[in-house]
Amino acid sequence: NAGVTQTPKFRILKIGQSMTLQCTQDMNHNYMYWYRQDPGMGLKLIYYSVGAGITDKGEVPNGYNVSRSTTEDFPLRLELAAPSQTSVYFCASSWLSGANVLTFGAGSRLTVL
Amino acid sequence: GENVEQHPSTLSVQEGDSAVIKCTYSDSASNYFPWYKQELGKRPQLIIDIRSNVGEKKDQRIAVTLNKTAKHFSLHITETQPEDSAVYFCAASKNTDKLIFGTGTRLQVFP
Image 1 (cartoon, rainbow over the protein chains, first blue to last red):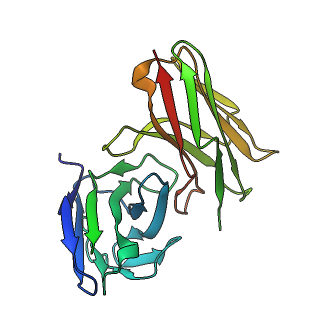
Image 2: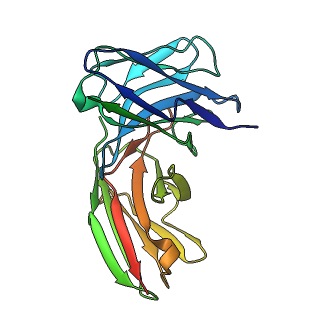
């Protein structure tokens, strides 16, 4: 039981490049989330999903896209990377609803130069 | 949508003293209020949570109180120890909605 697995752990992008952050959970959780955490700052919700085929915007969705084709996977796509997207990205999941314990992945540190 | 405010942003205490962190939320329909601890370079982890049908919950040196009328909730840590040093986040959610976090409080416990 690996929990929530994120890849890659670290990545450096050039301005304008695109990439996908991968997130997989093996707990059969319905809810999945992507948060970003800027240095010294709090967790801002980018996108979330309440189940396969359903996604919704969070607080800071601009510049990102997501998909949820299976219960296990919730990839985050960055199009046309900008320096403002330099951050640590956390994927998380919870069982049944948003009102339950979140299990976080280890995080993906992204730098855009 | 839900908005969660958290104070203070930094808190320094002497080992053995108590620490209190306060949060307010905007959506009166929110019914779930967890607290997460994030150590340096690590992922956030749940330390305690409370639901709206309960006014207070304790777990050893940690307690959380909820005032639904005022829409605020607080984390209380007693007999602080150096290993309590971390960033603490409050959050709020409704059953079928997303979890929104506060801005975090950096707690430093000095020996």
